Amino acid sequence: MAFDSLTDKLQNVFRNLRGKGRLSEADVKAALREVKLALLEADVNFKVVKDFVKAVQERAVGQDVMNSLTPGQMVIKIVNEEMVKLMGSETTEITLRPATEITVILMCGLQGAGKTTATAKLAGTFKKKGRKPLLVACDIYRPAAIQQLQINGEKQGVPVFTMGDNHKPVNIAKAAMEHAKTNGNNIVIIDTAGRLHIDEGMMEELIEIRQNIEVDQSILVVDAMTGQDAVNVAQTFNEKIDIDGVILTKLDGDTRGGSALSIRAVTGRPILYIGTGEKLTDLEQFYPDRMASRILGMGDILTLIDKAQAEIDEEKALELEKKIRKAEFNFDDFLDQMQQVKKMGGLTSILSMLPGVGLPKDIDIPDDATKGVEAIIYSMTKEERQNPNLLNPSRKKRIAKGAGVDIGEVNRLVKQFEQSRKMMKQMSGMMGGKKKGKFKMPFGF
Image 1: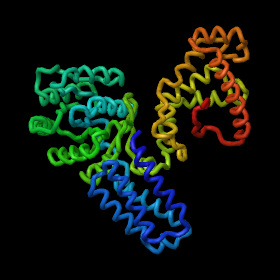
Image 2: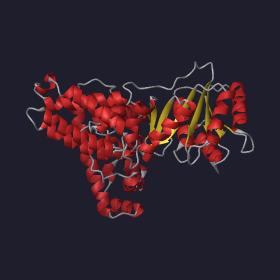
Image 3: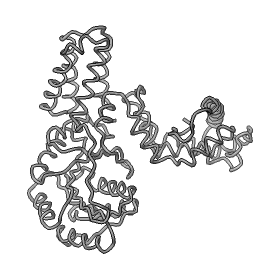
Image 4: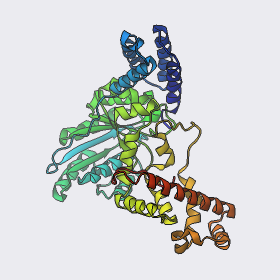
């Protein structure tokens, strides 16, 4: 996952700082040298690193810090605050016109950055907020680009305007505006062509669209996995067409993550969203403070809560709570909870956001890790799922055969299920006096 290496190195530095009762100026400078090396290895822009370390040092080498009861913690607090400042301090929303008017968003970027997918993800995000987006296929050069946008648009339930690949992008964009006016769309998102590298043809095409249509927001999509190159691309696009913000994709991959720390400082333009996976729902609003928390290994509970509130059905959660209190939790409920966890990005994603849960870099819980469990539950009859007490040895043998697993796996699942049910009943009893309606994590894990 992104930032793993950087997080590990920073945590080692902070561990050494916490271990010291008092800090000297030399201690702080030595720690910041390690921080500097870690940031450079993460592909953070050199000038950005230099300015960052200088800002931290100026604040950390002071009497208030040195003479405090927890100087190590004070230094960590300063690093966190400066990192938030580096990435923009405040969350930046895409500026939209009132719903009675049409907001035009121009998407641009290099080929391979995930621009077309990010465009569809963005449309889905606006649709959830009650807007009526229209996707416009202006990439007439890349084979299957139009079809890709149509497929993703259909999955998001968002219409796609296309005139094929025999018209100029500027004419397609003009026609799309008329279509939006006629059909009541209040956001038009134009997917433009990317190139393997920045060239005059691409820039002229973008400028021509902007000259003929009133574009409200020009958003650049960059690939986080390209590291420092992502920052260079952002800087060039900003100089050429004056971008309003950036969507950083593939932040879930094996990337050093330096671009997330550099883009705002180098271009002066904010990161608006981050792509955290291949699914069309894997687009997160960018929060500088939450990202700093993740990088420093402090978790990201707020984003986890946002994901849960977006994906977990509140009525189901309340119904499940009643079942647990009455010890009526069954395999259907267990299966439903597994689906809820998947919707939230899977176990690896959830655990990575919990403070203090340091997953080793080489451990990743794959999306299909629960398939064996699902196969066992689906091999049960409806009655068996609803009443686990029916599961005698002969039924377990049949279930194992149906799921294609050893009977030992069925026995293990049943045992784990029973233990979970007992534990949850005890927990619900202990929490009986607390108010209902608060956020709950999915049960069963």
